[in-house]
Image (cartoon, rainbow, N blue to C red; front, side, top):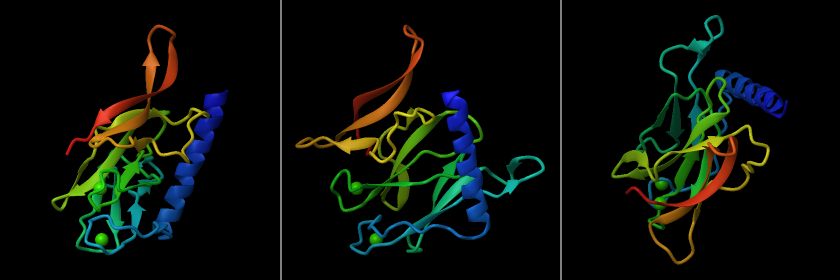
Length: 181
Ligand SMILES: [Ca+2]
Ligand SMILES: [Ca+2]
């Protein structure tokens, strides 16, 4: 029951997001410096259009995070029908703010979480993507899923999910991961 209820809420949020984006009411983010040029910019997530009859995307199911500074390329996320990007702060202290995203998908409670950073004019994975189980009521989305570790460089603590074979339970875990770039 718990999962069913969460899925309903999840699907409602997707529909709401899709409705808003189709109306052109794209929510702009708070301004931060995503490319490290000392000036702040905003972004909006542009979701793909959904064909109501086929319940599929018109074109590719990909989201574009588009920036107010047109020198910054779109952050293109495949297998995405919407989402609410997280502004994670400047995790590695190089002057650019990192962006996190759990891309919405049709039905599954499982999904990937991606941490993106702009490096040499390209969006790349800051750490390897990890799994989250977003139907879990104990998943506090107000808290960042990736955190700096005080006095350590290049490693971060992440919150992720795993299906534990022994207990046959879905478990929330934490671990330390290395920065990719
Ligand atoms: Ca900037
Ligand atoms: Ca950074």
